[in-house]
Length: 213
Image (tube, rainbow, N blue to C red; front, side, top):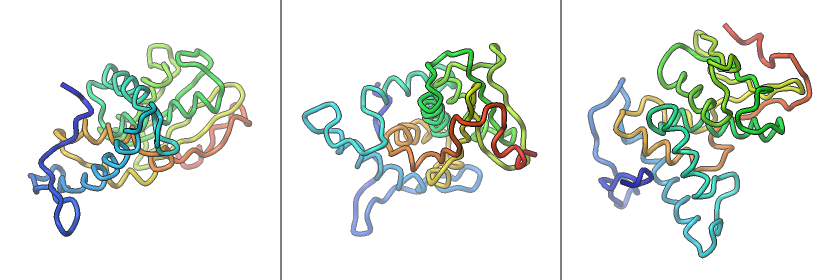
């Protein structure tokens, strides 16, 4: 079964995309995924040209790269949910910024979040992208009372990552929509997924540490 298949129970009407209401999970209606489905459709159309990258949105992953990334996230996390996929994209951006390859022992990843599923899932995506792990002692989780951000660093400096616009759309989705949302998070431009703060220029200093709880 293709893991990138999107739901087919949504229809188009005079008001745009309409999805049937389903039972809520933690008080959130599933229809909030409608915006993500529209973005996904646009991304798929953009990549349907004759060449492998024809019409691809700036900052979006190529289809081949997205498929590999989703497999890596699922191997670590159990499925490619949206928060884990967001963490994966943050981790990839950090490797590029630091000039490191996946699995480097020079890398340290520190994820700050409440001890709650969703926010903690980002750490699994970071692990899938960077190769950092608790067993290698270069992946740590720090519990906060509400803030959610990740620090990725080496001896030359660090970057801080926070969820961006996509956060309000993927929060509290029911379990049966998580994999579809993860596909969309992989396809949309990076600036919609995360904010990257800082650059590899200040070794040893934990940017934003005064915000940690």
